[in-house]
Image 1 (cartoon, rainbow, N blue to C red):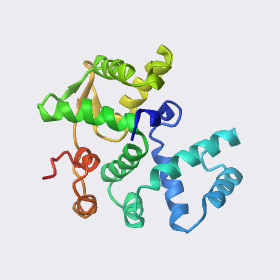
Image 2 (tube, one colour):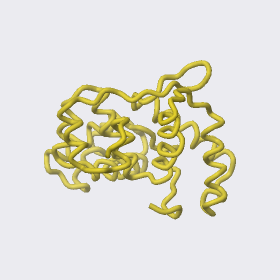
Image 3 (tube, rainbow, N blue to C red):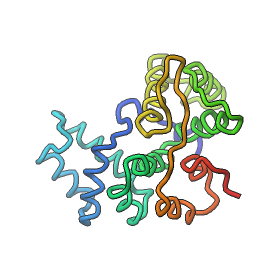
Image 4 (spheres, rainbow, N blue to C red):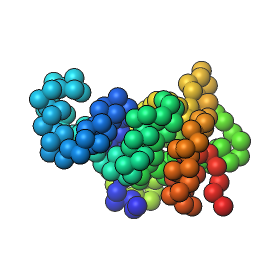
Length: 202
């Protein structure tokens, strides 16, 4: 992943958990991307008025789910809600370089030092640091950066890795169902898996 792969997708296509479950079921029926897109538009399962938005949602979700094995997609649909959301978060971390770096450099680092409260200013400072490293981030206006901060925090809340408080967000790392944890561990020494499990992999 490089700074050239930084995107603001999460500002318009956030966690999308219910929609992702719909697409996951269609994938397990061995439907192609084209077939899924056609079915979603004809049935309007996303309940969106714009066919262009349906197409964008579909492309984003399929991109995220493409990082999951068939077994992991099955678990995504069948396991408990918090574990299921952790699986989707894994797909998002795989597909979004800047979001991954935020999770690693801000959220994971705070866990490492046992600081469990995330403040909005810390995410803003993260984006300020990225401005120094990436021309692409520098090109984003303040409104875009504000929306991106909102989106990152919202994903944290919706995935179950944070709880909203008056001060900010209290960080937490949910219990992962053992069979799914085993699937994650089979991936190997992976920095994204560390974030998902909340554990350092030796």
